[in-house]
Length: 326
Ligand code: NAI
Image (cartoon, rainbow, N blue to C red):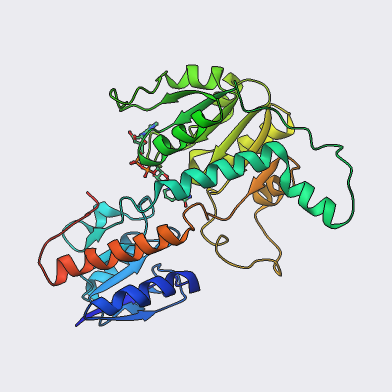
């Protein structure tokens, strides 16, 4: 029997993990706490922990897990920028779910873009109040505009295919271009200069940290839209806020935020938010924020549970390490 400690459990996670874990000889305890150096102590007696995007898996957390005898951190997500995997090396194996549904994320990016542009969120609220005025709801045709895609991996490629259906001209930047894909690649500066809309689909690394900042935004067209469904820290949010105030940026749709860890996935509606940058940016009429929900489809949740449980079974039962974070 493999004993698993499941951190940061939400009801929608549990449904899929409980159902699929019936196929395995696992004992899973579901905790609501996020994994960090304060809660890592709860892992005592478990073989593996399951963690998510906003857990803080730094060297301190890893040492506590290691001393508790935990052999594996199974990330139930694709990104692993919140794991100090160098500190884990030689102590604990870290595995992840490299792909679960690129469609879920790409489609959410499109949903954000359409909402931002055609202001359906405002129309919905107005008509419920019998306000049938159209003032302030003017959008633009996507047809014929230029979409700049940063990162042409699994999600970026699905996103590009959808964009083509709208008649958008697509250009892309990726330091590792897929030459067989037929995608029109340009360098980062040209992408900034030419795009009417920019959508981010690359991982957070030291090279991509704050790649959207005042310097790169200065190069962009006036009124450009920015869509971020990747990682918050790709954008310097304070610079973005200033560019929105200066009316340089025409609109922003953000599914992720660089300081989201303590906020996203929780009901904070009854609390005073101390993060002034987030409060200010959310208050902008041309900004939409969703709380890291791009992955949230039935198919993605099923695939996340499926691969995570299989990663654990392969290691503890079959002695094979799959989907390890290098
Ligand atoms: P992927 O690994 O298939 O593709 C990432 C692409 O980014 C690769 O083509 C890579 O060459 C490129 N890249 C690497 N460094 C770059 C740089 N400096 N500039 C531009 N491109 C660069 O990853 P996938 O599955 O397409 O996911 C992309 C990102 O989406 C993930 O890293 C994750 O942060 C985010 N994500 C967000 C979710 C959400 O719920 N909001 C859910 C899943 C992923």
